[in-house]
Length: 301
Length: 301
Image 1 (tube, chains in turn blue, yellow):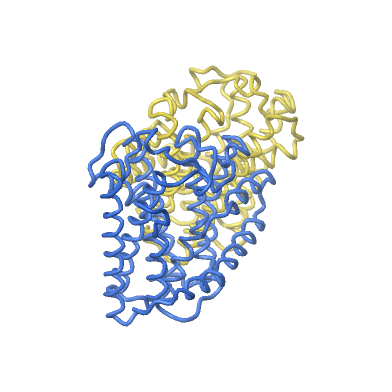
Image 2 (tube, each protein chain N blue to C red):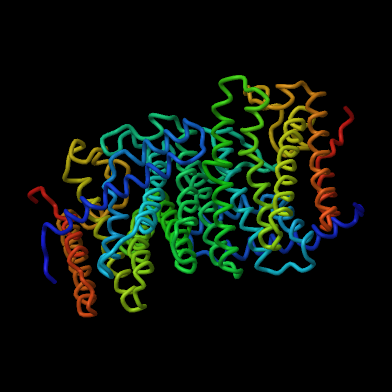
């Protein structure tokens, strides 16, 4: 596994603007009420890092050299699902957050009713967009199915329910991981699955890529939980230390901060093991390896 | 156009239990948190008349004699979308309704957070289900696209936004119709479009069926608006006279009750004209004609 720290940066600089462009073009093409369009665009363009689409395209790039516009659209449609989930999560009846990525949350700007509807609109749009992307029909149906599975009541929605109901009780580590497998893991796993489908990976490669995606998702959540403890609102662009005050179940709460760090390290190692297995199958894993740098904690322990 | 008043009743008695059965089987098959599943099932089984699935199957029955289980599943998946829209519409930040079909609304029973998530779950499930129904791939993709289009920010969600923003102003008749084309019309039109797609209708027949669906949708809304004025909470199973108290834009508010009745009659006549045109093309329209009896106002004027 060679690593080249310039590699991911160049990849992101190439594709992130293209992801943003197809997102804006798609949303602007909709014949919707101006207020609804504004509310949807507000959150889609609120400064997300496009981690999920970039992960999907990095998986695809690990399988072949070229990426076309339709594949960028498939990646971008996942960002619509992610954005809807943030809008609904931030609602007063859910996490009640006023700040997201340093900006007022959707309902603070547009009101609760429009925020619910902007979320519903983005969620539905993801399927509308994906259903008309120019790719092979069989792959398209599998993508539609995998996306709905990952986002729905057996995936992200289920995790969100577990998270909210869990506030009333102390979860075990196994229960916490199950919640997170849905809440953050499902979409990140889907990103890898979708890349594998578009890249025509065989079953073994696809399975390894999905395992990497699951570990990526778990690391993502532990990292996020740790940052909530160790960083400031300014750094995060959203309220911090909320998990403790709201009795959220998190890794630092459950394990203590040091063991949460260890769990993060173990999870990153597990992801690296998945990449070594992929490398042994002849897959280029440099971008996927670099993506794990995302989980570096900058603060001294 | 022959009519046989026994026809639709027999059709509904045959298919409504099958629609209910596949809905229950599908939702029970989900690996979801028990509370989430309960919240979704509660609203799906709260006594809906299954008008949208019945309309879809009636269109299909107008094109050929047999209907298989997969087609019943396609029809039932539309009911998931309809149910989600009711749950979200009833939320305090939206229409703030406590009663629906004579029962407490979802958020009154399960709380607002779970109601938002049950809605999100049902919406996403519709696509998950539809993507794995055993039908021709090309038709499946068209169904997925038409459903997402009808339900999303160019269809139902757009109409809902127009309805909520419209509360603050007096709409013109044209604006009101545009709102309703989204709010109630889009899913009813989709029901007809989906029936036409599964029944392999040619473009001309499909277009006529969609026009019928649009008129059906418009009649549905005018009828609902009139009932809100003339009926009691007991008859309706939900709060009535809310439209006036909340400055909702409705046909009776805009035109007066008598002209609203006339508009309903005109719309039903337009739908009958669509059926006459279909009949001239050799399509059996008896069930679709009988479905228009739904809009009979039982109260003396």
